Length: 395
Image (cartoon, rainbow, N blue to C red; front, side):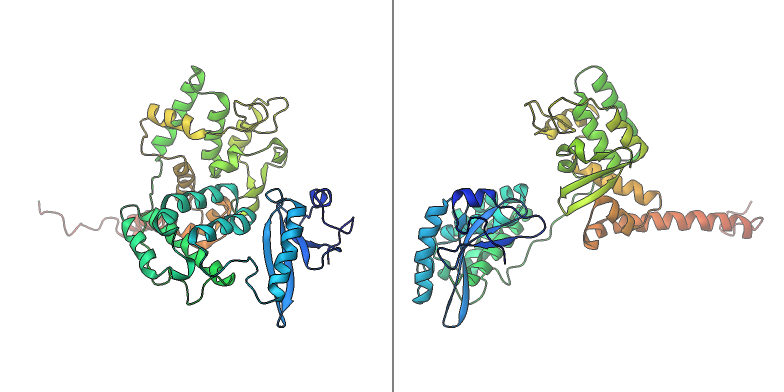
């Protein structure tokens, strides 16, 4: 069991707490059952744990920094009393609204467990779709029709409709876990719309042309050196945009020929550097006092908006339908054309699920067909040499 250095929870003791590999709860000596959960990311959340009728209950009070240690202690005492007397620990009835549930969900779940980009997406879906549609409805009174009506309303934007359905499902799963409703999840049996995956792969000629455009724009000063390098690295490594934009020099090992990404979308991973990618990094000027490989305009910050530069590049290259993420797809496409397996491509791209890589399976089939045709043509030249083509027209 984790122990507090000063034996009681205060702002000073909580500020000093940290963990490395896994989260841990540090318990207070003054108020039994009051603690603070500390995550490797640095997030700290006040919790209460006590028993009633032989059952253990743990309740999250709020995030350190949002509420103070003293306020958390006062709330903890109230919550412990409510649990022991059989009341709702939050002092609320089952008629809390979806908006109240969403606010708690963001603080206790999303902000603790999700990356910043995911947090922004969840807030956006909640604010734009879910809360305007049924945010004022009591959690216990939400029915499948509320979910289905919103899903139908968003049918013209199926991607957003499906994200609203997914987030709604998570909300109501937690509502049952937090004993705010019973009777099952109202999102169940509302089926997602088919999502048409965008697939745009650069051809060999387009890769060459894009390289020429990058060189020309950089030479005439219309494209700064660091955004140009970021785009080249995306093409040469197959990395995600943020993996390059948020790359620090301390995680670049040119001698070993690899990037060490401590916090990619799928966790820590190594990215091998080709000689071409290593050359881009080796020639890139470093900004004193700035730890980022791709620095931004503000001192000490990384580039915030690579899309702004990409829009100018793709317009110049007449590739208006190509997104930055398509550079990653094109890396995978070229790897398949060169004979790499799907499993190897998954490793190169940092996929942790084979289903993610499977989207390129049709390209693998095309590559296999082309290889088969080359082999068969070679054999055909040997075994059919001199045989008259029966389908040819008579002389």
